[in-house]
Length: 76
Image 1 (cartoon, rainbow, N blue to C red):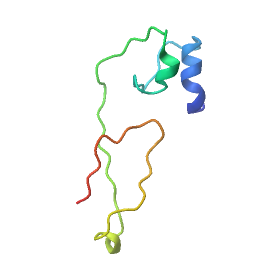
Image 2: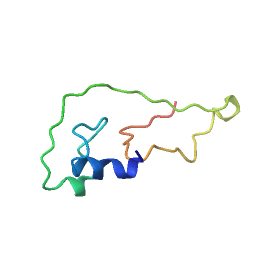
Image 3: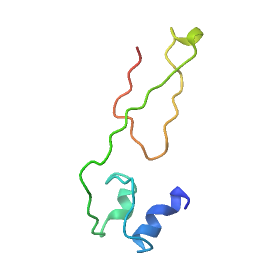
Image 4: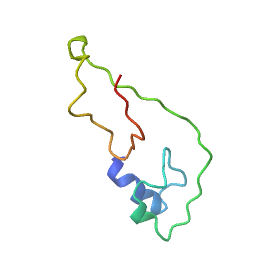
């Protein structure tokens, strides 16, 4: 199912469970819905890599998957 239709289908009752999910995703569409959330199921650490010749330069652009929030991004 396309990601942009996933929450709408869930809200319409097409299925009972959606994973992953986050209260902040599509917050405007969640108003008035009763949604229960589990405890954290999985934590993921994501890294950014670069070619060795670019290692002294911080990246100018970093892509992020739509809907995911990079709480902190460090460059070493």
